[in-house]
Structure formats: C-alpha cells, structure tokens
Image: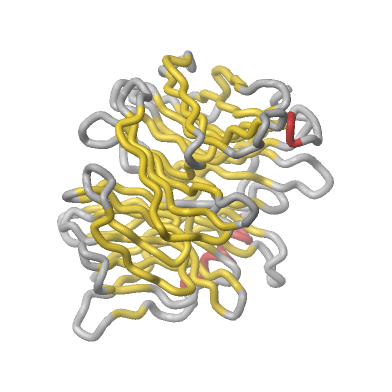
Length: 388
C-alpha cells in the first residue's frame, strides 16, 4: 500500500529560490533595536508542489526535519519528508498509496528514529480518511506503519509531539458522520515508541491544532470550538494529565473565522496561544492574562527565547497574498523588537525553532515558498535568521 521514493534535489531551483529570498526587502526593526539577517534559505522541490506542515531539529543540532504534503500532478497526494542541513539535503523521500496521503507532524524519538503522522485515504470519500502514523529509521526507511479510525468517521492527525517517556502523543480530528449531531471533535492518542496505544481519549469541546507536553508532565492542547451554523470558532484550550484525564478546559471569547491552525508554547507563568490576528497568554489554570491584536497577521508557530522574549511566525496577508512573516516581541507581547517585511509571495512560515550560540540568538524557520514565477506551485523552505 505504501511506497518510498528517494528524490534528488533540483540544484537550479534551490539556487534560484535562495537568491530570491536573500534579495528580498530588508528586515525592519524599531530604531535602536536589534535586527536580524538571513543565515541561509534553501527550498526543496520534491514533487510538483508541496507545503511544509511541521518541522523539528534533530538532537545533534545539525539537521532540520521537514514534514508536509506533496501534490504530484495527476496523482494522489503524498507525504513528503526532508532531512535538511544548512548546506543541503541529507535525503528527500515521499510516501503514499493509491489515494491521498499527507503528513502534518514529525518527531525524532530518543533512540534517533523518526515518527511522522498525518492522514491516509482508503478511497476518494472523506468517510475513508484515517489517522496515519509511520515510524522510520534515521535515513527515512519505513520500520512500520499504522492507521487508526473506524468506519463512517473521518480522522487525521493535526498535531504531534514526542514525550519525555520515549513515546509520542497525537491530536487528531475525529468526525463521526452517523452521530445524532455530526460535530468535529479531538481524538488524543498516547503511544509508545513501537506505536502501541497506551491510552486514547475523545474530547467533544473543540478541535485541537496544537499540542505540547508541559513542564509538569501534563499535556496542553489549543485550537477552536466550532460555533454551530457558522464558519467561526471560539479559541479553545484543554489541559489533560498524563493518562488523558481532563484537568481543565477553557473557551475564550475570541472568535476566529475558519480556524485551521494554532500556535502554542509554554512561557514563564503560563502558556501562549496564537492564531489568526491574535496572541494571548493564559495562566497555569487557563485564566486569560492578556491578549494582543495583530490585524492582518496569522501566527501559527510560537517559541520563547532564552531571555523570555516571544518569537512568532506565520503569514502576513498583504494585497490578498500571503507573505512569510516572523517577529520577536517583548515577553508581554506589547512591543515588537524586530519583524520582517515581505519576503517571497505567496509564502508562509509553518514552524520556528530557537537557536542559541555564544554570540547571538537566532531562529530556524520552516515553511513554503513559490516554486515558479506565477506562484502556482510551492516548495518546502528551511533557513535561519540571526539577530544582531
């Protein structure tokens, strides 16, 4: 059912896109504040078009793992994985089957193996979409693959993270078509390193688009609670213990149109949640501490730097086109330290990962960028920004 294919990089495309990125308008900052420069920026053209959905750094700090969905012309969608360094790819692989597949999450486990999660279709119908998880060796070779789900329901991973016990946890969509009220829900599965389900829980309060393991050993999820009869959702958060039992659940007044992504990070004194045009901080019990508005910006990835500042990445909607956007702001989210101007268009950042050296702070960014002059197809993108 599944296939793996090694894909050679297109050197010409890599060079052209990197030059376009580096030649883009300069980054802007408040007068007297730090600014940043691009360390490297490399696109990866694996199939005709592809979008990055998640990224992690390997434990050795050398490579960035990119996971996404590829769209070959005239063929079903595929899961795409790239193991990338600052000088190019270690390997690029695609995985799929007879019908559409895609990756939304990637993690490196303690033993150096990889786990990717996403969705797999058994047919062309949404009732045949299943949660898909594969485990791979460090070279991208498949060790095992599993699908999860029941007939007449739609499932698929929206978020995943490794856990300190050596396993991983997945937040999946769960939509039961034959239930009295067909409402999207969150299905959380805790698995060990071999893919055995240790426990699973279904939560009807909202749909999670992000998950993290907190410092106290619990798990926090963020996303949206759909408003019946509309395309809007209220911001939703859920904290569960290490056995999947709810500790608290909160719904916030903020309403988001077509909520499809959420940023989530632990910060001193609580947690940060972001999404379309907002960033908020909540306390340890989920109480809202503050909220900041960012018109025209969507933050789908967050990180807290060593000095407590907040890094946020996503897209800036300018002239109806998406532009990759990243900013570093004060710990209270009330002052921008620096932010980028338009880079490539259309483009976006999916993940930012803090870097720290003896001389300065930086970020690894992962996202997507145009693969052609018309912006009709896209490449995976990875690079670095360094503050100075």
